[in-house]
Amino acid sequence: MAYRVEELAAAAGVSVELLRSYQTKGLMDPPRRDGRVALYDDRHLERLRTIKELKDNGYSLKAIAGLLTRQHGDAQRTVPPLPPVGDDEHLAPQELADRTRVPLAVLRSLEASGVIRARQGSGGAYYTGADVRAVRMLLSLLGVGLPMEEFMQLARLQISTMQEVAGGAVQLYSKYVVEPLRAAGLDPHEEGERAEAAFGLLVQAATSLVAYGFERMLRNAWAAEKSGEVVEAWR
Image (cartoon, rainbow, N blue to C red; front, side, top):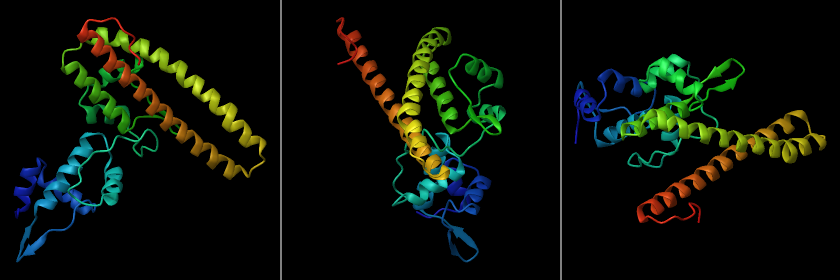
């Protein structure tokens, strides 16, 4: 299938200007030429759809470029989860509002309630693609009929529990990773690299285990609700 630039943009649901911008940034292969006419094919369409899907899931163009480089074929369109660490975007509050299409006042209310949390950096607080995804997930929940007030009551209980878990995990990390590294007399640079790598592993492992446990509890609780039996949520 051959597409002119306008036809390709329409098929992918993007503007011609955005398509050309992606091409300029090296996210798409150049078209073949038939005289003065640029012609694209289905591989370009798949690439555009992949970029759009990743963008909708909160990835920056820089992160998308890295993911596309590592793909073995343009036909592979599985969207990996956003990484818990290493997100390269630093979004200001208004940028988060623009990306999620949620008024800034509502975002501030969500942050005050603890549902979203800015990351702290040397330049101050900022948001990342993970915050974009979190807000969109919240909107999805509200879209299926969950009332905001009751959801927030449940969220506050979850937030309180997660604060205790996070605090305990950091204490374990300090006691069993940071302190032994300091006592080992390593070069400061090497000590810092090892500590940072260990903390990255802690974040990924703890996040995965908490998500796994909560997902299993939800499914078992729903199974118990459907069956009408009173059982423990965890099995």
